[in-house]
Image 1 (cartoon, rainbow, N blue to C red):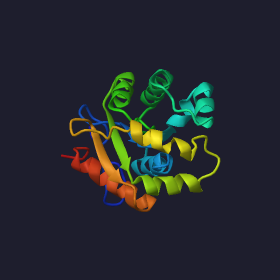
Image 2 (image 1 turned 60 degrees about the vertical axis):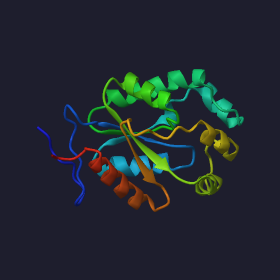
Image 3 (image 1 turned 45 degrees about the vertical axis):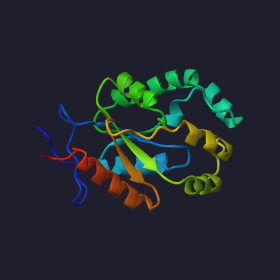
Image 4 (image 1 turned 60 degrees about the horizontal axis):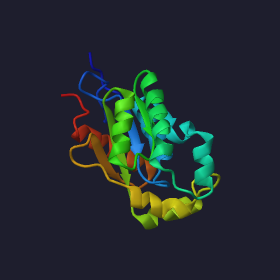
Length: 188
């Protein structure tokens, strides 16, 4: 039986056979995956997992040196992240760049169940300013250009919604929930 998730006037359907319980907040470095993902998970009554936590030390060292990861670097990380999401009960919101369609496909395949992506879209200038303002993160601003070069925004045939990030966190989360509802994650 399906039940709505509580939050004022916004509800999403609890996972059923045709609805996702796994959501990946995705986009380039500095777009707000962690902040938005944590706030979205809280609003949905779910759990947030930060994909960066599942990078092996070699990946973190490489990025810290300003070197972009290769696909060979990413495969084990993406699979581990997807399995970690899938092994949790209930709604899980993960934060992961998932810049290419093949990465999103790999995450969905490794999770073994429907996974919906929430693409955080923003201008290069906005994201660069946010990256410059943060401290203590291993991803240097110098890798932003390679992130945008790699980015393949989700296509219309993917299980994904797009949300503009030029707004406060609460507004972005509200817009993400509205986009998910429009995409069929609502009580029918």
